[in-house]
Image (cartoon, rainbow, N blue to C red; front, side, top):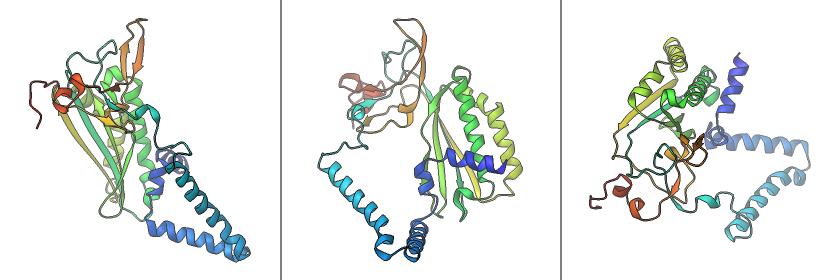
Length: 272
C-alpha cells in the first residue's frame, strides 16, 4: 500500500512540482555528484561531453525559437487573443447579461515542511484523497454543482517547503457544503483528523468565497487557460438537443466584453 500511495503521489505531481521539490543547491549538488561519477569512470573529455552537449543544445534551441526559425512551444496559437470565460447559458451560448450567475470559489491546498519534500512521511497518503475528491465531483457535476478546477499550482513557502494549491468553482455554497459532507471529502477529513498529530510537518488549508452575480469577471490575453477558463459546463446543444460539455472561453471583442465593469454586467458604471 505504501508503494502504491507513493506512485499515486508522484503521478499526482506535475513535472514542475517535482523540480521544485528540492531547492536549487540540492539539484546542483546532485548534478555535481553525477558529473563526478562520470569523470571517475570515463576519460575526461568523454565525461564532460553529455553536459556540454545538453547545454549547447539548449542554447541553440533557445536562439532558434527567439529568432523565429523554430515554433515556440510556449506560445499556442489559439490563445493569442483576448479571451474571457463567462458561465454560459443552458444552451451553451454566452449570457445575455454578463455575470448573471453567482459562483463559489473554493481554494484548497496542502503543504509539507520537511527536508524530504514530497517523500516526507505521510505525504504519499494525502494525495489520493485529493484525487478522489475531484473524481467524485466530476463524476456528477449536476448533483454537486461542480464547475471544475484549475491545474494544480505550486508555490514555495517562506520556510522552504512547497505548497500544492488548487482553485475550484461551484454553483452555490449549498452545493459545496453538500459535497463537503459527501464520502470522498469525509474520508480525507477523517484521515486528517486521525493523523495530524502524527505528521505535524503536513499542513492543509482552504478558503471559500461566495461571489454573488454581478461581482466577478475574468480576462486572459496571450495566456494559457487557467482558473475559470478550465471549467467545463453541461449544456443542451441548440442544434441537436443533446447534452454536451463545453468550455466557457470566448473572444472578448469590444461591446459588453470591453472592460472589467462591462464583464461584470455593470455597463452603467464608470471605469476608474
